[in-house]
Image (cartoon, rainbow, N blue to C red):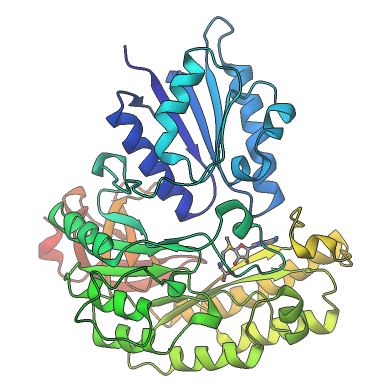
Length: 450
Ligand code: SAM
């Protein structure tokens, strides 16, 4: 019987995409993938290290999996992804039951590494670089959805924000060739995919080594040229995330205005509204030049949905600094906001700063900002009532048997009553009600219910 592998994924879309690639390679090399640790011969944890909590969760899960596994069964346990890259061999000391540690650039070598562990090698470790000709191929059966596909366009990060671990866990920025990206979009289109997300830590820092694939597409930056080139494939819906404020050129908005299939959603993390804190964070943008970018997004001829990330309780953040974040969030009137309490990450520059904000104060700031955001978001969501949104029906809702769920082009979760036959279709939904983080509506053309 083929060995069965279960991969559990933590963290961002990039990790989801890495899991899809790892699964593709494993199946090509004769492994079976399964949906539960109970059926597996090998359990891999694809990990996230952005915040300490995410990192701790992995070690708890390793303990649980080992405790539940039958003693007579030889189960291999591996750690891959960001925690693996950062902690390396020390993971074997932290958790003596781990057999494999596989870094962020070793996805392609996974089968070989598992094979080494299966044939008795003790503590298999690979933290090396990617092979230059590494395949980015993902088999459709391994994708997280049959309708929506993630396409990594750039990996790594060169920004070195003082709080952030990513440049250390994922290395420097490397952009994929535009030709390869466009080919992948075309293949997905032929397979019936309706939506692609161009993903990367900072998509708008995209800088491929050659022009290949961008010829004939104008634009102020390689990223806005790539957006136009991908739009020209006529893929129905194209989203992109995450954008880095300093590199956010207004030509991105122009490209979105020119092409209906470039979706009306921008995720632009601000982190703080205080210039003093932004400087300590080494973000490379000020409050004023962030707001200039927001101004361009808000004055677009299309109504662009805007979301962001904020960190509260960064070392040295005073009450005044926090008030500036509150006022910026009010000014931007975001459609959605991810709020994080600052988490000290070893070996980042901010880890050397004195963590002056007590945990209770971080929590109080988190809750206050959440209240402000919720109030605004309620208003933003209420404004959708009576409007018709184009929604990709992705799957049956987990909350109600009779409802389908999907996303609008502006990346809102939309639930509506509809039959299973509509799954995978793009349909018009009239918004009739709102919840905190979702919209509810009815199909505009009832005859299409099928
Ligand atoms: N590259 C993007 C940017 O900075 O514009 C964001 C990528 S990061 C993986 C996702 C989010 O995690 C960040 O925007 C930030 O809000 C949050 N984050 C990163 N490091 C953190 C830390 N040390 N503590 C708390 N939140 C953190």
